[in-house]
Structures are given as structure tokens and as C-alpha cells.
Image (cartoon, rainbow, N blue to C red; front, side, top):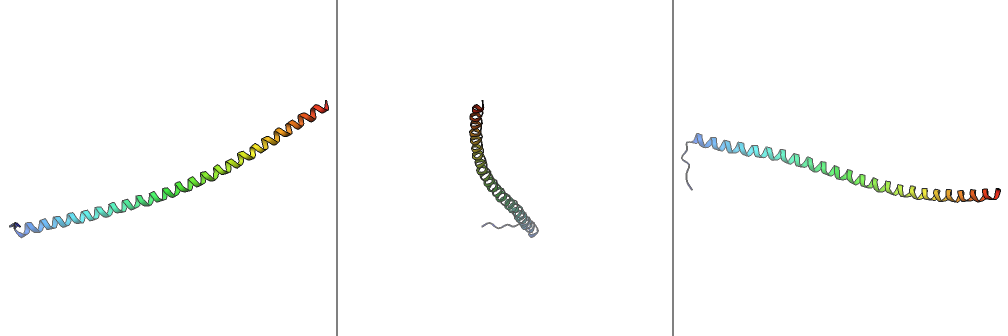
Length: 93
């Protein structure tokens, strides 16, 4: 191992610089970690919203299917009544 023969003043400045760099890296890492955690939480919220919306869509589609089926029943009933009216009308004349 080679010895550094620089005066102690120069060595301390280098150590201070390295310590300062490490502190900056730690601070930047904490900022990055907070940012990442925030994104994770936002992503989880969005996934929950997507799930809720998909469930709502399924519920509305089921409701729509019931309404369409009910409408078909009414159309069929109206058709039967119309045919009955036509039959009764033809008997009147």
C-alpha cells in the first residue's frame, strides 16, 4: 500500500469532501425512496379504483341485461295485444 505524504490539511479536506458526498448520496437516496413510495401508494390507489370501476361495469352490464330482457317481454306482450286488437277489430266489421 502506498502512503499518502500529503500534509494533514489536504487529507482532512479530502475526507470532509468524501463525507459530504456520502451525506448527499444518503439525502438523495431518501428523496428517491420517498418518491418511489409515493408512486407505489398512488399505483395501489389507482389499481383499487380500476377494480371498483370494473365491478361497477359488471353490475351495470347485468342490470342492462335484465332491462333488455324485460323490454323484450314488453315488446312480446305489446305484439300479442296488437294482434288481439286486430283480431277483435276484424270481428267488429
